[in-house]
Structures are given as C-alpha cells and as structure tokens.
Image (cartoon, rainbow, N blue to C red; front, side):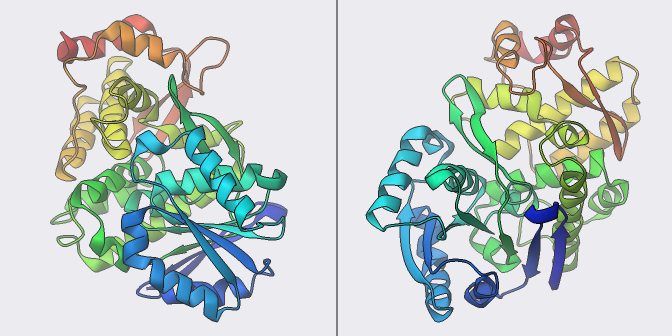
Length: 365
C-alpha cells in the first residue's frame, strides 16, 4: 500500500503517507519539506531498539543532523517531568526554532513530543512516525498534544499540528498483541461515530484481534478509512469547538477509568473500549439507539479482545467526581458523545448523575 491523505487546515495543512515497508523513506520525505537541518528523535528504548537505526540512517542520508532522547515506555511517564528532560536534551543539542522534533513511537510518545515541540522556543517543527495501531489511526493525526496531571488525563496540552505523518504498517509486527487490540478500540470508534461501512467490514472479518490474524487488505482499509475519518473531522474543526468533540466517543468514562486505576491497570484503548460500552448503555437508556445496536457494538469490542465492563473495585462516587475534572466539562456539565445509530452520534450535556450511576451500578456493587 502507498496512499497519501491530506489534512486540510489552511497554512497548517499536512500529508499523511501510508507506505508499506518504507520506513527508510522518512529522510527523503522530510528533505522535501523545507525543514531545518537538526532533528531530535524522541522515542522509547524498545521502539528505538527496533527502528532507531533505520530512521537515523535515513535521516542522515537526507542530510540531517540527528540526535535522540529516550523516555521509558508507559502512561505513567506522560508528565511534565519527562517534558523537562526533553527540554534539557534540546538545550544540550542546540535545538533551534528551525529544528524538528520527530516522534517515533506510540500515542504517549507522540502526545509528549508534540507538546514539547509546541512549547520549546514557542513552537518548532514536529513530525509523527507512529509505531502503534492506536497512534496510526488516531493519536498521530489532528494535533492534540499534551501530558497528564495526577488528577486527570491530558489536562495539560496544546493544539499543535505536525508537518508530516508517516505510517508504515509493517512496524506493527513488533507491537504486543495487547497494544494492537487497544488500537482496534479507536478503529471501532470511527465505525460507530462516522463510518458504518467500516463497522460492517469489522463485523464480517474473520479476525481483528491481532496483527498476525488480520488480513493485510483489511488492515490497509482500516488505516486509510480511520485516517480519512480523522482528517475529515479535524479539517472541519481543528480546535474542538464543535464536531471534533465526537472523536471523544468512549473517552469520557474511559478516561475516568484510566485515571482512577492510575494508568496502570488499563492501556488507553482498553479504557476507551469500556467507555464505549458504558456510553452505548447510556444511549440505550435514553432511547437514542436500540438494544440490538448496543449488542452489535459490544460484540465487536469483544471480538477485538477488549473489555466492556467497568472494574468492580471502582466506586460510582469516585467516577462521578473524576468526570468533573474532565477537560470536556462546560459550565460544570459533563459532555457525552452518544450514538444514535451505527455511524452517527450526538453531543449532549443532558446525562444525569443518576443515569450514569444506574449504568455503572450493576458492575460496581
């Protein structure tokens, strides 16, 4: 596969290149973008061990000066302390305003690299080379960057678009199965909120729960349709003043679950999966969609090897309290994205605490 999509954002527009087995093209791609000569690669030790040599070699061939900074893997390192260390490395290597930060890794690395790029010298170039399915279909596109606060996920951040996104699906062969499944949560999300044909393709597929079992043509379709959906929504609403909020489907309660379990029990996609199941149940209780549609969604989530139930040890009152810290709260009201049918959702702040408690109670008592 060799596809190129465009995120249309005026002067902030950029390309997403989906290129099978062509990670070594990154140097030649970036040499065409009129970037400065210095590139700081930000990655984690495992990913850099797999792909650092290829990326560094390609960038050197492209005429760039290259340095690197590694952050330990894990959501618990997505904080301001890690960003400070990136700044220290940038200072040591004399990273200038014309220089570039390149994210080589999953969503955590991409979010942190983008935030560091947005804030170093008031903004420098930023390139995404995602290596997880979740990052490929979601986190690398759209310019949401940031880190976590102890009281909530992604409360500290900025909208800051990359200059370029390169996706090589073959790097997924080294992705742990759990992380592949986490990425499928975001793919299912696109099916529910935007693309019912994608949802149906996932329903009829033999397997969607691992890189080794999914058919290559389906994986290509997943990447292209998911990135196109994200690009379409972001192009209409770059800074989430309207329709872009639908991309948070499953994230409201999902973030609460992640936060209350200190980002250690679940990876992000698992939180989103639980959040989608709970949001679907809320939508059914509000008569927005049918029990059949709830069952279709939940069956697809389980088909991807993902959880649908909130952990039994979490207390309803703690979940409700954590929801109030969500960055999507407006005038003290939590905004939910709820499905009205497969492929369509609405945004509402009319979900009562009693209704949330009613949905949570069966699995939290």
